[in-house]
Image (cartoon, rainbow, N blue to C red):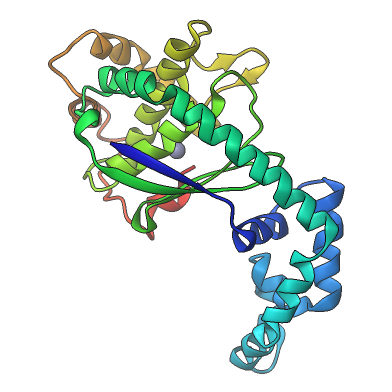
Length: 269
Ligand SMILES: [Zn+2]
């Protein structure tokens, strides 16, 4: 069973707000509030510590930044705008949780059929850290068993499709092979085939007014679509075997690189 626990966490949401480039007014105001109260802590939480390196003693500057973090954080957590974002995120958490539960059995059956992997015997417990849907996030942290997730529901079953995308990153994480090619196969499997099957409509690479898939992968996906379609009708080959086959075919373009927490996974989303 693949179990997802959906979590709303204040510190996760705050760092997401602070590092995002959103034009949303609430985000701009909250950034400014913390920046005015403690610039150094702001830089750390916004994940831009460059200004702290300009100090004479970087290590001391880091200590100064977090010295009053308890009270600085509670100052932000109490802010009405932050509380509103938190409340809306909780509502979104319930929505995603409900959609996931409703679609679980059917989507599992489709994914088993698409990947040809025994996904119904997989035991996987993941925590899904939810952020506000106006601030997009989709990221896998296999070593922490965490998915970071937030997105507007651009089309039907959007959350289900992309949670499967992130789950496939977790499942394929320990495989040797080309992470670039595996990512393209995950997009063909989830973003495209699962979406079309679940919604009973639509085509590859486009849903209504939205393009589907990362630009840097779609070119490769289009190149392997013919093999992909043949593979879907061949019960003897699973998605890992397809990856191996395609890798040797495109070997000069896709060097074998082991996925690791410090390498390719950083590009995943
Ligand atoms: Zn991905």
